[in-house]
Image (cartoon, rainbow, N blue to C red):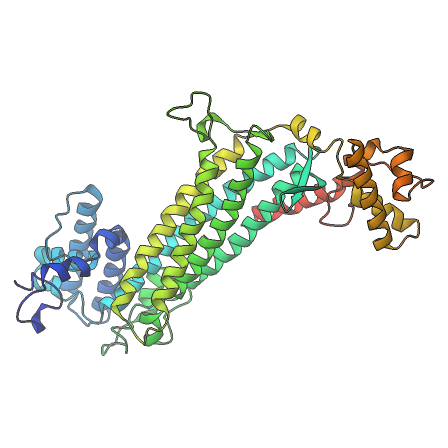
Length: 461
């Protein structure tokens, strides 16, 4: 065995065992970061040349070599070699082939420790900023459906039991506000990528007169260089912030998916999904399965596992860098890819959905959804709420025994519940939603106001 051209081979009499080589290699995972590695390396080389740390001619040769490497990687012509344990090694190995000793100067005043986290933060920033548009598209789809269904009423549920009528717009807007909080969390993750670790070296800084401000500015690290080299190379907080966003988003989309699955069932029939976001059965010709919604449910535990996984890796690690942190990209990239799959699929599913106002109307008619409204009416007549609650509960029981809904209650039911002689308010779904006039409620004016606020909020993202 030989060192195989690895960056650290000089210390060792022979190269790694094949089993360790396979364990140690991260190229299959981190090769996607080649644009960020080339970009950061070019900034680093230019800074070295500007500072006189390496000859200007060598800096120019490095820059030209890295530009060619980028072309090779983009076109698929780049030839990886057996000793390329990660994308950073592969790029520097190829640079040395192209530029000779000039290429060997690139790693001056830099460690893979600060190089890797710099590339990772650049990659995360680009991916996260792109996902803002995906969040906005999903929110816009929900808003469009909400605007079309301000006057569509359906049961709201607690404990999976029909509770009170709500407007479909109000229900869909609940998910818009969830996405707004997700957008805030994503913003925290993006902000955490604004500080540059480049120039921190392996752990204690570097012994050259580098210009960290210059590389930070060129690479878009608007918060400037990191203030502590140990923290810079050992921290994965930005990644964890992103995984927190992804996990919570996954939970929100899972809840949306679960409701769509329930609403799309033959028993409920509240929504008809577009064929483009459903699939059939290999055996049952009649089936139209809400697979996009079901897969959204299933992705939540995957995303929460990514968060838990990286938290588990980071917990208990001493400062500064440890090889454990190589696993960070497994969790990060899985989450990025999962979110990239989910957002357009859920957006298309919601945008193409047909909500069945007739089925929803039938579900809010003839039951007991106005029971609380009747209790509230009794309170306005001077009844203590608990006494009113008990009386309405007796009325519901009497109606169930008679096989009728609250709206059909007659003298016998009122007498059995102690409500004979009490003037009854309208016990319709419309009256119920309109009674909730406080901000955040289901009255038409409140929902219209909420729609405008949500639309303005999403536009600010």
